[in-house]
Length: 234
Image (cartoon, rainbow, N blue to C red; front, side):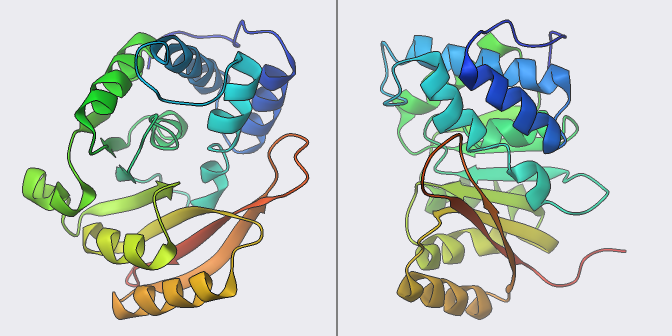
């Protein structure tokens, strides 16, 4: 990651992001890089559809503010070393993982090559290190990157699909003690919750408590649904 200091962007979106990112353990330098990344996404959006947000304030809320709770979803003192963002789309929350833990190697998985290339350009424009973008379907990831099998500490999944199929897809990547984090709405339906739990248990994972949060002044909240592979090292 390059660049230092607080973001130069003005507006309530930047102020909300700064406050929330600090509360979730992000450094000022990481927050600045996150704003730069969102600015790059908006610039790239003129050529490749990465977000429906039209202003920087909206994009900071929808993309970045929604992603920074990952900073408290990982509750251990030691940072994750290897992370995967399944179906990254616009690069978040995977980029937030890379900024929260700069020593972590993060793989962003995006099946649409055009979007993958756009995200790659945004990462470069924001000066963020430790991030690789892989253009493939998540079901083909272990063929493209076999070293990720059983070695991934943190998998993040946002706006990809229901809990059950995405949990089943990501489970083989997780190391002992690895954590799988799904972004879901406050009103997660009971049927999806139950199917996700069944898939997690069938994959050798156990549930952890949700992390609940709210983005800006929205009326409805959000939750991070978490599953862990038992056998935490140490």
